Length: 278
Image (cartoon, rainbow, N blue to C red; front, side, top):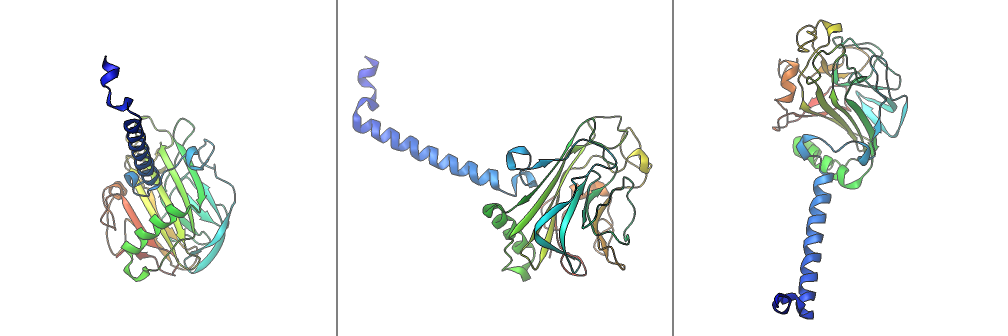
């Protein structure tokens, strides 16, 4: 009796329901695609195995990706680089490997470095480090739009290459509290002429390991991590926590911003001097 009154027993009604379900599926599928590709999802670009990332093996002081040949040369401090290395201790170095578990003040001679968070990281007991080169059209378009919003003079910027490295829930060396971890990310963008670097600080709970004078229970104190850029020649460098714009603790990078979006930082990096977002 119930079936006799069910409205979709009618063939026309069944067709209507099928069309409705198809429309709903189409809409939700496209919403999912857009959200899963967005650079703005919780301020982090999606990462991990399902997004084509390579996982850095667990390690401490000297673990690195090995040489990565860049498919598009990356302009940095007036030079073009064709290879880079991702290291465990929150560094990306160009052309030659640089590994050091003790952060040092910039400038450093002979080291072209991007340091989203240079400190003594240890992933032997937890955490993960991911990286990939990216040429996905949608992600490049979204990232380029962010650049154009932050840098009004670059309204025609359209990235053709991106490199994403993510340090996920990484603890510090000799950490005595497994709940104290950091998650941060850097994205390198270029159109072949200009370049921009984005730092995403999802969660920063510690600033220094015991090797840098930090407290093994809290990860605070001692010599804090270094966040910024080093040219490797002359006096060209940029520390994002201590410069003409600000003087803040490293903990504050996960609170403040230079693009009016907490935890997100964007810089132009191709010129001889680093430029902050406007």
